Length: 118
Image 1 (tube, rainbow, N blue to C red):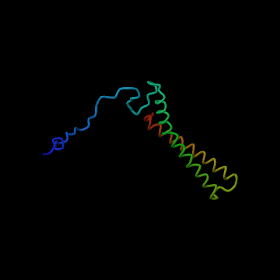
Image 2: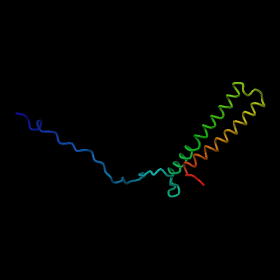
Image 3: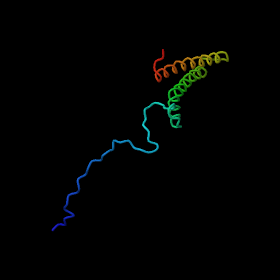
Image 4: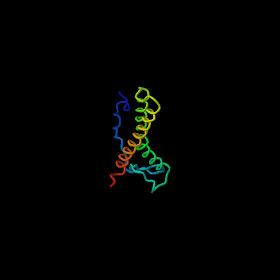
């Protein structure tokens, strides 16, 4: 005769439940995707703002610098700018291109972030 403990069916499994109430305690925050430096002057809020600003401005500006400096280097090394005067002119054109592209890109990114102005 079989033991009752070995023939019994396993207990029914209940699905995992999740609570819908927010957790309480320190460090629990809700992310809205907007900086709240005016309301709460926490270090994390300033870090969030700095991350957004550098992500929108510094990255593209570094890319533009790399692009314009590469054009200058190409002209110098491939013999398109031979001599001091030609290299000086290529350098000036590279700086003007850097300035033009930086202003245009910054304007576009700030309008995308802050909304159309004007």
